[in-house]
Length: 403
Ligand code: ADP
Ligand code: ASP
Ligand code: MG
Picture 1 (tube, rainbow, N blue to C red):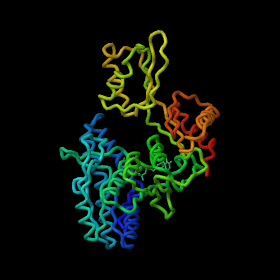
Picture 2 (picture 1 turned 120 degrees about the horizontal axis):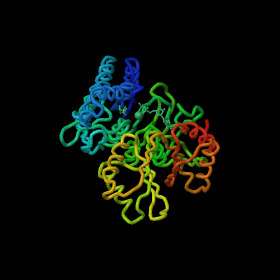
Picture 3 (picture 1 turned 180 degrees about the vertical axis):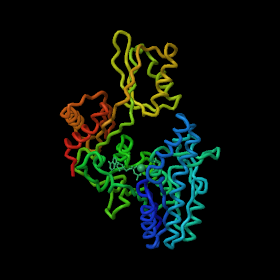
Picture 4 (picture 1 turned 180 degrees about the horizontal axis):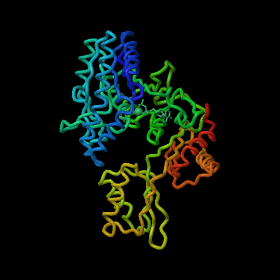
């Protein structure tokens, strides 16, 4: 059997944790399995690297950031390979160049395109445990790229798909996927299983336990995932296509604070206005979400939308640059301290009243809703960030999700 195991930052935070990872990998190896291990940077090392860069300049070039980031994962795999070797099992560490793992060109947010498996297979055939750097790739200019924060999960799933692995285990610092972030909602319940679609919505709307692209890729290639703790033997959560029908209308709730609301007020109410606004933003790689357009009145209308915090300044600059030219508006309102709170569940598709129940829970917590968006299996509200935890707990309770 070929097994891919991914360990996150907390799981490799220090010498003891690295030896813990080494032992878990050796245990798998001793069962006669081939073991490929993907590691994140140690502890909060990626944040440390960001701080180091910010000391040099407030706007580090994205290419150089990726060059810097890759040192984090490289440190982990080298140290873990040493630990495994020290425990008497042959091991080798590989970075994105050595595999190689090819991505698109975009620094800081690249997508994996192709993974060569020849080198990994060669090392496995020599009975080695193979450790691969998570989060990084190389682009067509032979530069390092990274896959976005939390991207090591995606490296692991991509490797599992490319190697046709029999298992892909994501080891982290909690026991699995919970009905809400267990650090915020203390009575959140661990799920035994969850569908790719529900997990994708949760991950895309703030449940940082899995990188959303990793779930997208797992669904696309049919890679079944197990999310579990590196610190105990508990069973974890299986992420797969179909799960046994649960009575629950809602599987989980999530909160995303990495959001800014931008409202463009007093736009001319004529054809092409939304097109031009969002075309300009797209040209500057600004992803928008939760778009809301008001009913036109007295020849004008308002459009508001959300962007991630790091894209806020680009979005504002882009809109201002076109003011009075291709975009005519009266006012630009930017609200940075907002958060999205979402409920996700396949059960809501066939059950009316789920959204109303969520709004009631938000009302019971005495919180005002600024904007609403939905998908088939998700309802999201935008609220003042300072109430986000209260909202999360209230909604979690209202749907009876507590364990
Ligand atoms: P790793 O370094 O292992 O990748 P992350 O910090 O990226 O770990 O992800 C694990 C964290 O995700 C947990 O510590 C938890 O606080 C958070 N989290 C958010 N939502 C959920 C959820 N629904 N279930 C479990 N963990 C969650
Ligand atoms: N080290 C990277 C991060 O902190 C990637 C990861 O951990 O998945 O975002
Ligand atoms: Mg992570």
